[in-house]
Length: 78
Image (cartoon, rainbow, N blue to C red; front, side):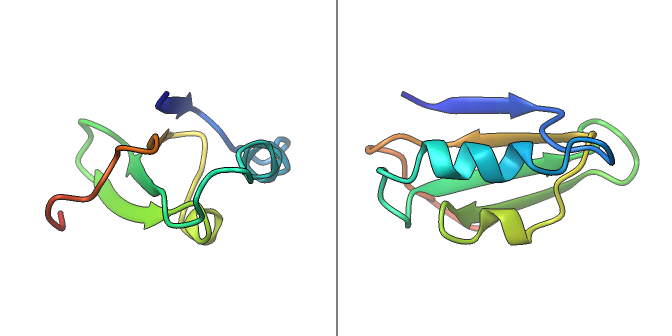
């Protein structure tokens, strides 16, 4: 199944994103992960990463993180 995380990290909640990565460590490290920051706002950004590297991206309280499933693939770069 696909996992969607809204507001996954904040100043006082920095460990939650690492706990999520630990929870899904059984998945392929190359599983695509999409990250949208400030959706529908002037400074919106989108990144496609993978389970192995997604916590290195800018993730904050205005982020939406979508972790793919075993059938998820990145069709084209954003």
